[in-house]
Amino acid sequence: MRKTVFLFILLLIPVAIVLFLHRFGENRYEIPVYYSNAAEMSSDICVFPEGQHLIPPFTFSDQDNRPTSEEWLTDKITVVDFIFTNCPSMCKEMSAEMLRVQEAFRDDAQLQLLSFTVDPEHDQPQVLKEYASRVGVDEKNWRFLTGDKAPLYEVARCGFLLPVQEGDGGSEDFIHSNKFVLVDGQRRIRGYYDGDDRQEVDRLIQEIRILKTEF
Image 1 (cartoon, rainbow, N blue to C red):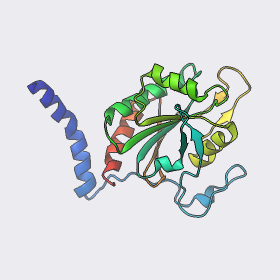
Image 2: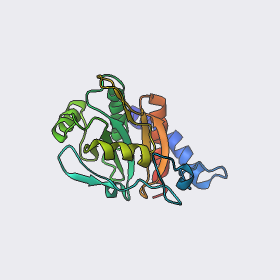
Image 3: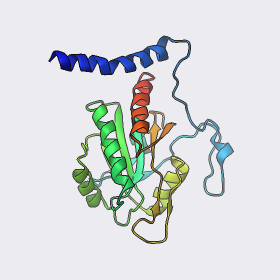
Image 4: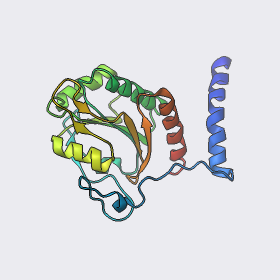
């Protein structure tokens, strides 16, 4: 028992130092807010309104066939990724790292996870439900979304600003980002992290803890 308590205290020391410096130090660790003037990024694909970029309206179905919209992000810290259940390699690593994030904040009502499919023709709600079960997901705070392909790809490109496009029809044709996206309770993007890189996900976990001090 003493060893367990000692190890727990040892693991908390770096977090406590970062939080102390964030709150009281002169050089404060700030989590950036991305795309403060989104209109400057408008292109032929995406047109953004003036001012701070926010995750735009969307409505898709989750693994239990419940409608889920952008309002689900409000007043929560959300980690988002884009995957597909037939993905032979990278998506499995990303889901395993998302599980680590979930475990790090187990029973924390402030944090939730959101996975969009980029293969909605195959990834219907029941398929996503089976995938969540196979991966070992605690579905209490993790939703998997599917819907029509065009709006899914639009929200990936123009909402979360990720390079998502369809390939030429083979088993690995869905070219999608390996990024995890950190979104705050105001639906602002606060960070991007390589979802298949353990050190990057460690950084994500630390920055979630720091971001929680803003709320």
